[in-house]
Image 1 (spheres, rainbow, N blue to C red):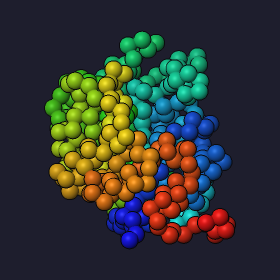
Image 2: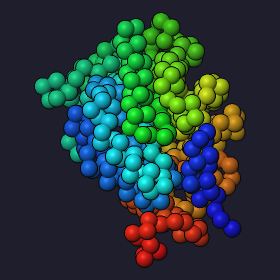
Image 3: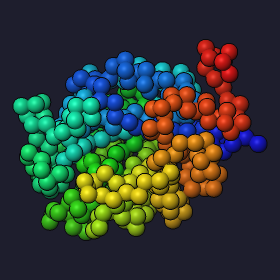
Length: 355
């Protein structure tokens, strides 16, 4: 019997050929936000390697929204040309190209991992970061993030809107709003990073307001027949932070507003989080959100084997399985997992003699 991991899934007008998704992973290989051949080969090889959906790394909607100076961006029209080449290649492999739109907020302006992952000052090519409140991620940081005023908030919402227009022009067929891992949307959601006293802080309704306004702006430009995902951190893994109960409530609202799938991750908001790492440690969150709200979910986090992924789909814990580090180790993860599960899937014709 064919596996469920390699069964198709239709969301709106798009049909994914299987449930294997390449998770957005920063490559820290861009100059001034521009994609280059590294991104084409990295993303393209995962498409030719059998994944159904390939989601591009967190792509900044504004220059100051980049995590590092080497992050991809989509804040100007000149970025579109190379992105078009990437989406065209992914589609040529019968895979779907996705993009994750992001703003890093207070976690921006750091050096890439192999340069020490350190906060950059302006003299080192860094910039002033922004956040809901002037609270740093690390207490030892050389400067505080600037608390956003109303004008700053409106500009950011407008940046997400313009980035969505460009994503459409570039040919993406799935768009994901990044509201996880301690980046700007998540910073508004959690009371640990959001201590505002205006309509964007305090109550649950106020803390979700910024992301709801970003969603509305994105939806005004994103085609109604294309899938729209939101990635959340289901818990901050820290006392007094955002939690699974709020995630369920939030997912219910997102579903009502037309979001198609919640990509369920966790953590990343505070440096003192305590995460009990083990294989599939985040899957129960995806399962709980799916069972309580009925929305489609994606599971992610230390999922490394075909049978493990198959069990997640088969038992109804999630509808998609996203692979990050395992897909860095193995670009042909889709083809290999199909073989492990006894599925006969199409290979690129250039590679068929190795099948």
